[in-house]
Length: 307
Length: 168
Image (tube, rainbow over all chains, first blue to last red; front, top):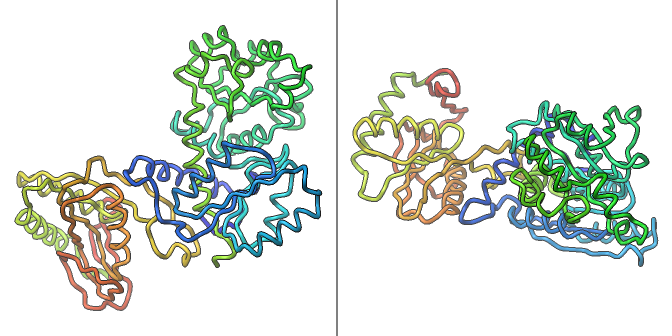
């Protein structure tokens, strides 16, 4: 693959780049089975995780990935409340430039912030989630997990369920799966699913339509904390309308459908307890594959500081 | 230009097999080829050894992630799956490659190998030694020696390149 500095969106990648990153993830995952679970590839390189939004999974996944490639990792945790928008990002960029980092992994609540940082830094910038815009490393781990389960992504049928409109996961994962030849459909609360006339992605009305569509995978989106904590959020109603209930799990099992979720799962909201133990629940595979996919992403990016 | 043909390579492999057979110790033997031509040679040597009643384990390693020139290359090389389905602890391992030049690949191969375990003994054996060493690493066995070859030396093997030949 030709040198690429940043990973900001799936849309910005060529088919060749998508395949190169997915293919290398397989070899990266094999490293986990060795007695020494790391390789010296990024020895002496520095990786900074810069998360303006709380995250445990994505950040630790990137950190483990960087460690397994022998890079040095520094963690920055910033609270958005103390930061004045705009000016602060420029200040941060100046700081980052002075620190001579090679890789910067950014999460921010505003779309486009990783792109701004990427434009001004020599370091390779990886978007670890920006607003409702993009989450490309999640897309890679999802595609990798489906490919690992079924051997290929082409013609696999995937329904994404939940608040599609505000989900960067839904967006990036749908894009990569369709680029790889999968069929994607959406299901969720009417006001939170974009019309198919805008996206070209069919909208299914309810679970009966999902089962009739004969999916290989159902992908449950996480309901955000701020919604669940709101006294007005109808948890039981949401579970009943959009979640995997025990009754639906039986039909999922009968149709041999796989369950995916970006984590962390809200038990009793998106998934019932039994769904987590279901034989085709791929949630733990997604976590393990996330490390391999992120190792492959780090490997394939070339910071301007190095050339 | 081809300097060795299919028959030359076959003769060399026969002698090479004899050499391994003569030195096979009581430790369990394993041949680990370097992807993407050393693994093919290792496979052929194992088949020839088996015909002589000597069994050896087969392994293949991709050393890309251990190279020292990743930053010097314009493109990141594609990664291949390594295959080492046995414990290397206490084994007599032979690293097999097609061409040795600087010794940097051999260095990376040793580092790769030692992350899988602690073999009792490791040897390095190659089809062609073309000189120009940059590191103090020398193969224990070489089938063909080209003294400080100036141009490109390439090994073609049927399994990958539709013919057996050494080109120079």
